[in-house]
Every structure is written in structure tokens, then in C-alpha cells.
Image 1 (tube, rainbow, N blue to C red):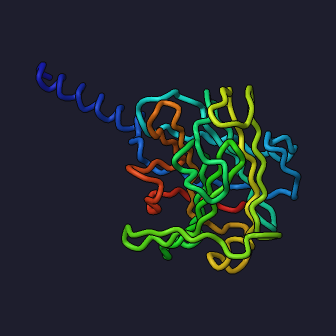
Image 2 (cartoon, rainbow, N blue to C red):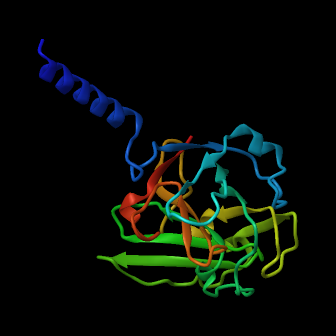
Length: 243
């Protein structure tokens, strides 16, 4: 074996190793199995014992700049709906929005997207900020042209249950904090007509889980299933499976 052949083999070996140990950032995660549980009360901190049955799932930071801010979520479901618990390190509550159904995405938020039928370009979007304000939308996204529709008769059993917990500060604009959490329950009744009935064991939906933070003066994004430019790239959503 001459020296040139040896060098070529070493380069090929290193390239193969890099491909197997460093997958592309924009690779979709494996389908996430979500466990079934019994209903429980929200506190914002995620203190129900049911949360101990499932692991934290990390969100990936998509943009340069800003603090690294560990961000993660948990998810469970019942016959009536889906529980989601977000947790994120933070330094400050950066938002100017203290009313529901305002442009919360222009400040710090956690976001949930559910897309029960990937063949239909219509999905559910939910945003919550550290001031416990929410934005609830149905999104038709036709060939990249999208709009947001708010729910009708958003009350009673159709309403999202929500609690926010702040660590190291108060729930106020520009308050210095260490972290914040949002604990949520999405009733299946709210998701009609995206779904006809509650999901059964083995059913799959597409979904994504996001965070926006503006402490650095610009939008910094996190995602469970990474996107290239914006959160409405629904073909890049990951899959959740009801276990």
C-alpha cells in the first residue's frame, strides 16, 4: 500500500465517522411516545406525581447569540386531553404584552403546535408568556399562505387550562428571573374539527414545541424538531405517538 492510498483511506474513515456521530441539526427527532395518565391539578411548577413517569425532552437552540438557556418539556395525555409542561432558564421577562390574544410572539413565549392530520394543511397553535397570557389559534397554511383564526365560544370545557411558575423573580414586565415554567392542559374538545374523536393507543399526530426569547434584543428560537426559518414549516414537525 503506497502513501497516497493510505491517506485516502484515512480521509474516507474520518468522513464516515463524522457522518455517523454528527447528524445534521435539522434532522427530525424520532417519534415521541407519550404516556397515558389520570387527570391531575396544575400548579405551574409541574408538581403532580404523574410527571415523574415521563422524561424531560430538550429543545434545540436554533440561533446564534443570546444565553444558552436550557429549555425542555414533558408531555402526557388522558382520555380528555393533553398535558404539556415547559421549563426554561432565563434572565429577564422580555415582553410588552399583558393581555390574551395579543402578539405574544413578539416577546418571550413557549409555543405548542399540534397537527393531527398531516394531509390537511391546517393545524393548532398555542402560545403562552411568563405573564400567564395566551394566544390560541387555528392556522390554515395553504402553499405557504397562512392566517390565524381564534376559537369561538372559548370557554368551559373547551378552554386550555394553564398555570405559570416564576423562579427567582416576579411575574412582571422586565422582571429579573432565573427560570420560568408553564403547565398546560389542552382539551381534545378544543381541537374539533381537527380531530373527530380522542386519539387511541398507537395513533400518531405531527407536532412541535418551541420557545422564543428576546433578552438579547433579537429573536432567539428553540425547537424540538428543528425548522429552517420559522415555526410554520409544518412539514418539519416531529411525530408524537399515543402510547
